[in-house]
Image 1 (tube, rainbow, N blue to C red):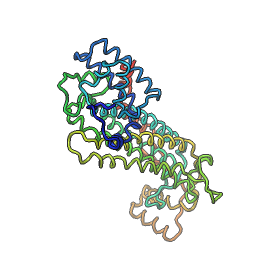
Image 2: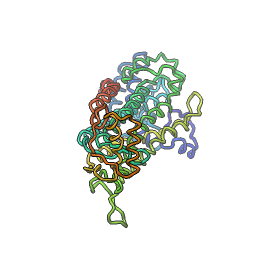
Image 3: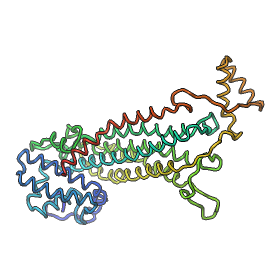
Image 4: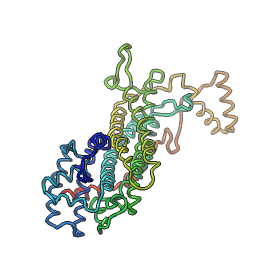
Length: 443
């Protein structure tokens, strides 16, 4: 069954190629397609395109289909093109001609736009929840190990004293910027495209404000041409937010690879969390960090892939957009897996103590000595030259005592301020309003 069926059979090879992976990927959209249909027909009843008894009958049947989708038992049959066709077929099988009325005033174009935005909202909420677990782990480790010094590096050369508190805390604060991008992506996704139809609206007197309220959207995508043009752009914006998260986590994973190596030896994974070598019996490899790094690099390529698919298209719908699903929908599971396993690894990581007692790191304290002399009255440039000469002559020494007090430094991590920053960003997400609206719809 195809919603555009005109009574002739299409070429089987063309059918197989044009359907592509839609049957597989559309399973992710099934519960959202049902919710969109419920909101749409509720609106159709208010403008006289459905009778009240028809609406109640259709809603009851749709709730059954929704439950099937939520339980993971929804299927798209082999000869059915997509999720939209499958839902309408199920209604028609159960209710006859009544089921054929649900498509009035909409197109598969605004159906998939709507499904994707509902799907994106649900996925963003899930990502935010998991990201907060990682944030909390990083902040807890930052506080736990705030007094343990490690060398900081520039150009991969020993530079200045750092600390585990700074290292863990840096990635926690990095997630606040990623959350800001995710909040912006949420704002883009949280606009209702339903009623745009094929991108040019409808001669039916649709009440788009009503469907916006029923589906818990903050606002409408008003202009019907632009609503349709949001396909691809929305996915790209969301993928940029995921790529930002991936950049932070991938960099943390790279540090994990570096710091677990014997040449550094700052941290260790429990042996149960490492892998071995088929030839070298001593190996305990940090494969978890290496794979997280690779997955995160892959995720960072997604925005460009989506841009290449949709970026050179004029206004209006084109089938090219279908391919974006293949890039976009799998991103969320890949991203969530990386977040979860990173949180697990960081929570169980073992850190080394007394790292800075190693004489290899004594020059990391050179700036501390310069600053000590400057505070005692020596002009900074003279103090710099004095310490530099002592290093060159081989008799620089430092007692290892440091005193950093300014905001965000070793002795004043400001983790509470970073948490407040994160809380302020979280307040931008209207999860409760959305979930309340959707719960009312499917109740």
